[in-house]
Image (cartoon, rainbow, N blue to C red; front, top):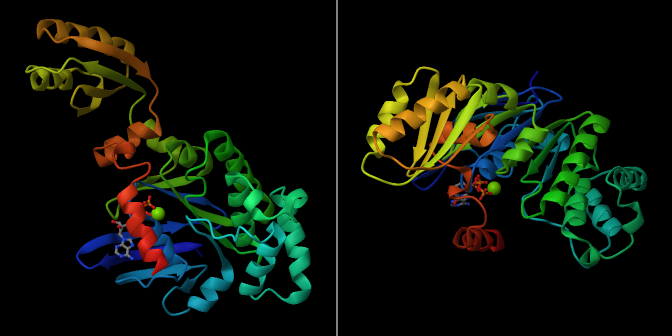
Length: 331
Ligand SMILES: Nc1ncnc2c1ncn2[C@@H]1O[C@H](COP(=O)(O)OP(=O)(O)OP(=O)(O)O)[C@@H](O)[C@H]1O
Ligand SMILES: [Mg+2]
């Protein structure tokens, strides 16, 4: 049995296909991630899987139960940590967890024990009796995650677990997620628009863009499928650019080329042999190369190759979108 299984899952908001015919499976015990930019459909998929949104069409099973037919059974088996923090700032950490435990209908005689256990796991026992208003962003997130663990779910959903946190704090949260995964022996489904996060945490990744899954594989396979080496070029913009790329494509050992104005990325099996040829062509066509570098493929490269754009295109903070989202949430 799969922990998560979707079949042609779709969700439309008016004319917008936020989730467009998505099919994937997640094995028990896996850490699976959706990697995609703002508006890709990550949260919408997660809200369907956590029974908070009804799909327009298609099917989704979580822990073997259909989200539409058996939402209660699904909810009993999952933990869900939303993208936006949900803790109450004026309560203490422990009080927040008590509230969460009651909402989850955890039997009274188990509440204290479960809370102690998760506080210990995420190392917040020391601060549990202080108001959350005094907590750092990372501590709040950890408390959020603790809330999702109280009823010992089989499947944990983490929607952008480190969004907005600085890189050190993000790394620490990754350690906690790994620790939770091993100690609680659960399946984790997370979403992120951070390449490094997907790379560090996930056994497999689905790259999602405009409501569609572009590819699903392990980070390692994705990277090695790109070819062994990546040559990144920045050239002076000029008329000969198209011709330049045409000529580059003719080089043997070149697997694939992506270009975004003056930025050219070449995937090659033997970079050191390709570079002299690049210089030859640029010299013939009188194209000035500003920078050139040879690296191993990263998930960034994989993402560009499948979606045709960088994740940062629309990534980061989109004020207009955030406002629209807040408005929806308030309503
Ligand atoms: N309730 C709603 N009503 C109308 N449109 C919505 C609603 N919820 C989401 N959308 C739209 O659906 C698309 C997918 O949104 P979703 O929140 O799933 O993206 P996401 O991948 O989670 O992005 P982010 O990185 O910003 O969290 C977006 O274009 C969004 O504006
Ligand atoms: Mg989202």
